[in-house]
Length: 504
Ligand SMILES: Cc1cc2nc3c(=O)[nH]c(=O)nc-3n(C[C@H](O)[C@H](O)[C@H](O)COP(=O)(O)OP(=O)(O)OC[C@H]3O[C@@H](n4cnc5c(N)ncnc54)[C@H](O)[C@@H]3O)c2cc1C
Image (cartoon, rainbow, N blue to C red; front, top):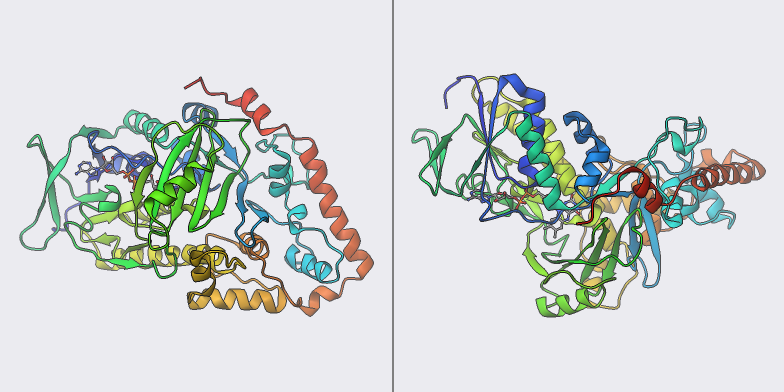
């Protein structure tokens, strides 16, 4: 590869990753580059990936998406968190809510005060001190109102979306094409490399058309047509920590108003997702093929649907982990071609987004710089690792011993850093997330407590407040949250008034 300016970008693949990349790159690098996207209708997209986290709003704002239009056109609903049913103990559930937990006091995180009161038997369930969780339990939702009362949680409501994955890709495609992205329909049948250095030179379509570029973005899904099949990047496999490697996905009919959260119910050998949309419910069973057959998983899934199935369950196979190099030579992998962490905390679309953001920042002016691609790869690996540990926490911190799968998860070796997090929390309720970690303190605390980890003590500095003042403080936090939830409409009412989609 020469040190010519990098102008022509070819995105191979038009799923969520391909169209998110196209829409963002054309927006931020606009006049400097020419973006072409090739996709194959015959191959299609994976068609799952319907629950998100609040960071997606940054992508939407960047490319100028109108929220009402977006939610309507994707049959979307709103999401304040994830409910985990039967994870820590059979018969129990908790919600990991987005946003803040309680109100910090004197520079110390809220949960430490809660832990002190809880140890003394004087605090309610942690959930009562989360605005998002309280709103979820009440089935309520609204976005931040312009006249939100100062000092209340209504000032900054942390929320995300559920949407129909196929409609989302279509929506982004329209957006990207309007912004100047050229779309080519066709199936890539050959990838040509420069003879001297192995850089990708072009892709050849079944029609015989050849598409050249300076930089290729591999968004071809799990197969990684360029990054793996061509450049042999290799894969870091984390199955030993996250043993689920299959999923069955099936939509079903709605049977009631949509709840403002995703539900994850632990099953015998994995867990089942439930994503409420306006026109249907998305469901799937993520499971470990070593512990249950596909046929038994299918029966377990179909036996736990709210409404009538609308299609045959679709089997998807995956390996948790990521490519050794997600940027190799002149190919950057984004989306499933880069790696996969199972959808327990809805992080895959977020990883697409951060992959694009990093690429925009490190986009080469001339030729490819190994220093830049190494930095990119290090940052992506770190990000994957931090999310991995958070996911492993859900599986390992459980009391379940009713199936071989849960016995395995409860007793398996876990990554070193995670063991330290858990030990520190058990010891003194302290949680000190690493820098630039996606999941911040309120997330770690909610999942640790929800899974059943109990702190034995709290830091001495938290003991300075008198018992009476501590009681008043906790009551105040609860009252502020409750009065804010009281003024909210139900999730269904909000959708009706704001962004009702047309019947599908
Ligand atoms: C079971 C499961 C559940 C998930 N749930 C969530 C979730 O709740 N939240 C979340 O954030 N993420 C979730 N994900 C991840 C999410 O689905 C993906 O990150 C997202 O859909 C992006 O996929 P993609 O665009 O990388 O791949 P795909 O959708 O597979 O797209 C690949 C594209 O490449 C094209 N292509 C492939 N080969 C060729 C070729 N030879 N020629 C031309 N084109 C080609 C295809 O036509 C397609 O357009 C889930 C994933 C799985 C497996």
